[in-house]
Amino acid sequence: MVRSALKEKTLKESEAQFRFRGVDNTRVEALSDGVFAIATALLVISTSIPETYAELLHFLKDLVPFALCMALLMLIWFQHYVFFIRYGFKDAKIVAVNTLLLFLILFYIYPLKFLMQLLYDMFSAMFTKNWEAFNHIFSNIIRIEDTPRLMSIYGFGAASIFFTLAIMYLIAYRRSGEMGLSNKEKFLTRISMRANLLMGSIPLVSCLFCLLPVEPNVSFAIGGFIYWFYPIIMIPFSIRNRKLLSKISN
Image (cartoon, rainbow, N blue to C red; front, top):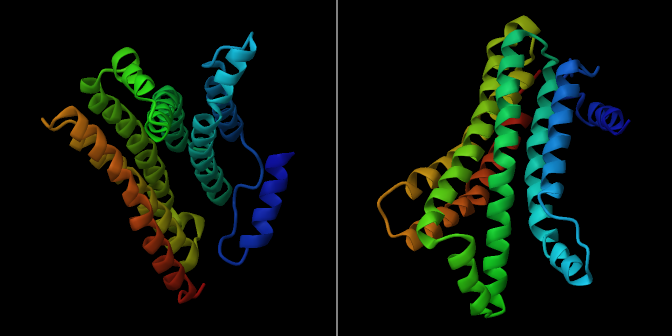
């Protein structure tokens, strides 16, 4: 029901830019939604059920990392949703690429949760000057020399997901004549492909940097800092493309 309502709202708001060809749910979308639901459940069940008040307070500490993980997961889900409502593909090639995407999401969910929890605990300890907790993180949870590999695992997973989405848009663009895409639709398809390439390039750069023979603490810090390039790159990219889109006729 929620998906149907979202589709109806999206259709009314965007019908002038894109003629949606996948309004009806397919078994591919149903399976994909199930996998996203499983990924969300894995975020929850990876934390044990609190049995005491102290454990409940500890569980509530996971709220921020869980919210960050959910936000990233919903970003990927929305990209997936937009793709299928735009093009409505059901053929074997898209099913194969979509299967790869779902596999990567399930692979990505635990490194994502671990990293978000680690960063939250680390920054909380730093801001509260709880150096005992800070030392506990890098002695009992993860060694400092292992942090670059953690960033590489996360970066590889994130880059692979966005590059897979870019491949899906590339397939759609190559079929633009077959589907009868308008000039605006072709432009939006190209932009979606390029946006995913940019979204995947940043974690890939972070991943590759963390594989360099650099001091682990420096590698971990700079590997994380690289993600701040997202707003620096994506905001001007979005503004520029909106201006270009307004100049394109159907």
